[in-house]
Image (cartoon, rainbow, N blue to C red; front, side, top):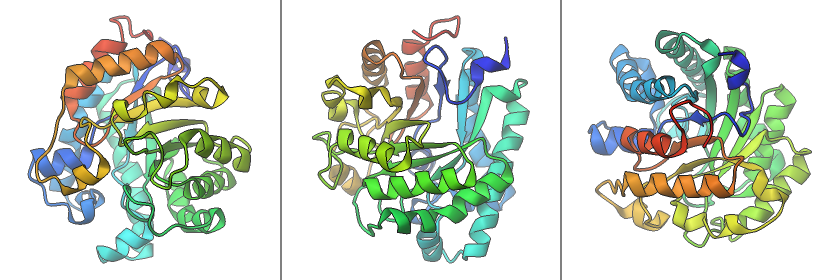
Length: 319
């Protein structure tokens, strides 16, 4: 085994797993109170850190057992200025939180894997506003200035990469990509779509990816789709064109419900892990570049294990 198998960005013949739905697992399955759906406050206590470690451990073990890579997210989806203010966390404290999150993830990597290159530490950036609604919209320039401090904190702490997830309009994604490029940090952009395959603004995923590439000089290492069920975007990925080849990762929801329905749900909809895994396998057969496989809302270790079994043969080579 050589470290080049786990190089960033992942090649089409090497798979990286991710975890599932961190916040939904903690809230609905473990009964943890997460004000504003923010997991980063757990890093403030040994008990919270231990809970996060217990959450991530089975995912990492699955990757090690199947001899594939793993992208280890920091629990920082809400660790930006606006959400921090709602949780009474200052901008200075947020910088410390984001750096500590990277250091915590690095320590977990060292404890659970004897191959350091196998696990990439990923600084997670969430939207300024709500992940399901394009509120608090910014220009690309505003988004770059807004998100740059979090990217810088990740860089200073030694993150391997950053990912902007649950992006629901292109300008915010463009701004984050520009901020990462200016700071010399590899960046991944993950968009979310509604049940019709379009983003919440009505823009097509095709347009958003091409526009982000055009306005950043193809800055993102690759794109992903997260926080939507495969039935919501399977059809649009049948389109031909270079834009679909820029999508190299999936983190789907377990449930086929719309974002509005999920927002109103008081119980977790875990869907069918086997069905989700079969959908991933079908997408990988059509889109052989898909190499980052994980989950989002409603998914837990069962879903990722099923996806891994469906898409990764025993040798660890891509299916």
